[in-house]
Amino acid sequence: MVVARMIKNFIFKQTKIPLLSKGLDVYALRQKVIAGNIANVSTPGYRGRKIVFEEKLQSAMRRTLSGRITHERHLALGRLRFREVEPQIQEDPSEELRSGVNNVDIDREIVEQVKNEIRFLYGVRLLQGNFRALRASIKGRFDQ
Image 1 (tube, rainbow, N blue to C red):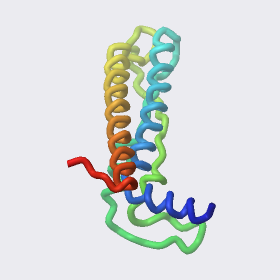
Image 2 (cartoon, one colour; image 1 turned 120 degrees about the horizontal axis):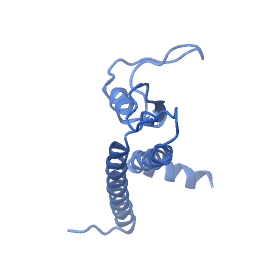
Image 3 (cartoon, rainbow, N blue to C red; image 1 turned 120 degrees about the vertical axis):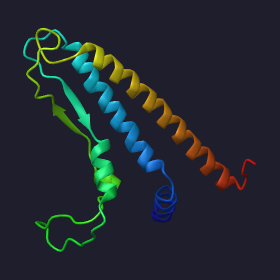
Image 4 (tube, rainbow, N blue to C red; image 1 turned 45 degrees about the vertical axis):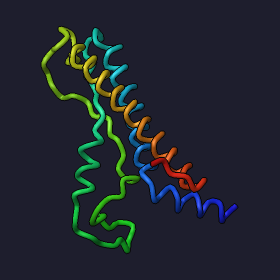
């Protein structure tokens, strides 16, 4: 059991599968947030929400300083591993009443929903391709 887990961890860490999987999780969460915004488009006082993830991931990948944490209260230095980057739900602070009763713009939400769906489907395709390649390498066959 321990050997199988070690092999699985080694194989998956050598692929983009964990990153793609995390991306799909973020897109699923974003879809829920967008659906909530659309459902509340006519709720007085509701504030639109959005997911912040890609910016945090890019920022984490750009860090070049390295360090080691030797105490639990130390600040992390260097690159965050993508597994450590978590999506954040942020409320739109805008006071503009885009829908007449709150700050949700239904047109923008529909566009974001479609963009998010396209990203999700593309992520699924990439993940399928990674699994196909992994399966082929395990079987010892590669597509020419």
